[in-house]
Image 1 (cartoon, rainbow over the protein chains, first blue to last red):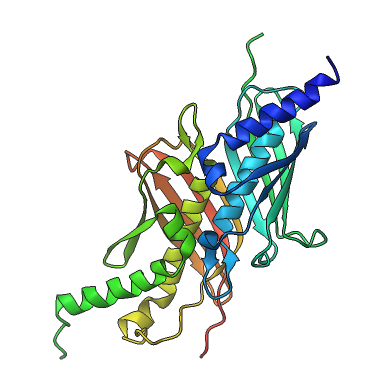
Image 2: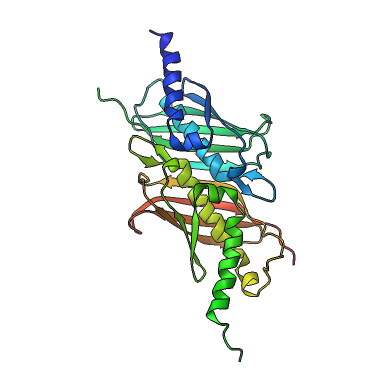
Length: 146
Length: 163
């Protein structure tokens, strides 16, 4: 049981993310998941550009990625909530993502209470030494009836 | 005393300036956001589309779409208020260089209700506009103006302008 469950949940999480219409149009891919952590990538896409002068991706698209990845981290918390929704999300933009680079977000659900989960996330382009943006959020926790 | 300008000229100038601002951003087109104008007041309009869904079971708008819609509306309002005087003075012409957009420093979204699968609207208010930094508040609703489904506050770095 113990060793089949993580793999099972990874697959469920992947299917869950890939069934989200907005995640699909942004080309999001769940690359790592497990133990309250998730990693999702989003390819560079000219349609997501926010500043045509520079070709830099709009902050809004990064928000969508951060939100999805944070929600995924909540869903794979060992306490296994059955559903979650964003209560609040704050994003700090450290620098412009390099045009052409894919964006990778890593999120961690670092605390879960009865009805609320707390998450932090970081977004990177190809340079993993210098984050593009960080986020902190609070999410609702729906638990299975006991 | 100078006679007021004919209404068509005023409208044409303002609509052309707004159009140039909005059409230049691919991401605004991608989400299908429109900006509605009444005098100097702007309203962001997000027509419903299946690709904006984040939870297919409910269904509900993606939280990231809501955040993006609020951020786009905030940036447009800020840019609009920042360029209004130049635009009214006729300084923003067809061949003028593109307006440099403010950069988001941080953006905090409060999700108050589920975003329903229907059109959404947003209006932003510049709460503080300095030479380098600006603070903007933005509210979004769907069926009822008083029942907000999300609100946000953001800080922005203003582009360095000549003068």
